[in-house]
Length: 114
Image (cartoon, rainbow, N blue to C red; front, side):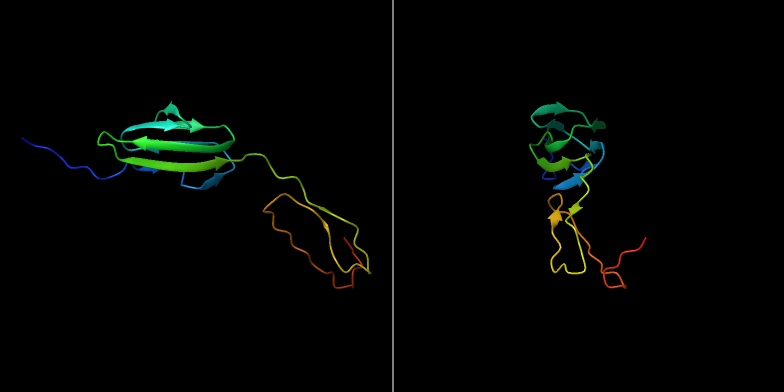
């Protein structure tokens, strides 16, 4: 009698766990069957829908690889800044969550020139 002990989980490429992507992704895996958000998924298919996704790939021995990822192809809204004058001591405005805002002071003491 011959048998193989398989403790190696399937290898998934095209996405990483907790990855954030701003475009469609092509996902492949080296063995087993997969479910994307609970639905059957075939290696080499493209995922286009925005949102959070969970891919679970399970091989014949029951080893599983789970990858959670997000696709967000929507560009963020431009940040807005309230009026800034020579007397401004605090810059206020709005921006999308997790944005990075950079504020630079002009050499001419707030006299803005293009």
